[in-house]
Amino acid sequence: MVDEGKPESFATEPEGSAGHDTGSAAGAETNGLRLKRQHDLHIAAQYVTLALGELPAVRRVVLFGSVARPLEKERPHRAAEREAGLQWTWHHCEDVDLAVWVDDLSDLRGLQRARSRALKLLLDAHGIGVAHHQVDLFIFEPGTDEYLGRVCAYAQCPKGKRDCATPGCGATPFLKQIRDFVLEPDALDPAYCVCLYEHGHCPGLDGSVLRPLLAEKRHP
Image (cartoon, rainbow, N blue to C red; front, side, top):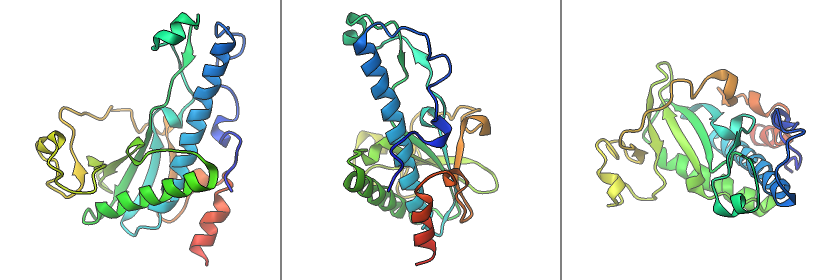
């Protein structure tokens, strides 16, 4: 069973939330949905991490990006929100960013399957719907921490899509390259990330009720 409250690292509202008018009841509802979305994606990250941790090639998994840190305020992007009088909203988390260190690139299809399997379990157990393409797996080389690419969302490589024509894309099967993509230098700053799995241990899940599930998998 998954904790239905906020993950321990997000036990309080983001800093600066108290005392700021969201503009209306609609604003309060919108921001409540933004917080719930972040929470749901955080749970999705935990599910996927548990599935990835079962694969021998996976050495480390780190959650980064907006799901891993307190939400920031931003001006409303949608016309309906501006028309409702909202002066600000919490950032809307679009997807999950997981950095994954693997020592063997020969079975990235296996990472795809693990991700899909975990998200189906999440939907079946808790009604939280997260599509497989909304969980990005950024692949890194152990030892050097070199960014290698992302796990592709397609079940076939190459798929014959425009994306597949990007230089280097698919040179390693299912390792996607994005033209002109550069990982931000501080993207994996430990101050803004959560290490969920490392060498058979799950430090980022110590306070999670998913911890007993991990113990079941390790000791059937």
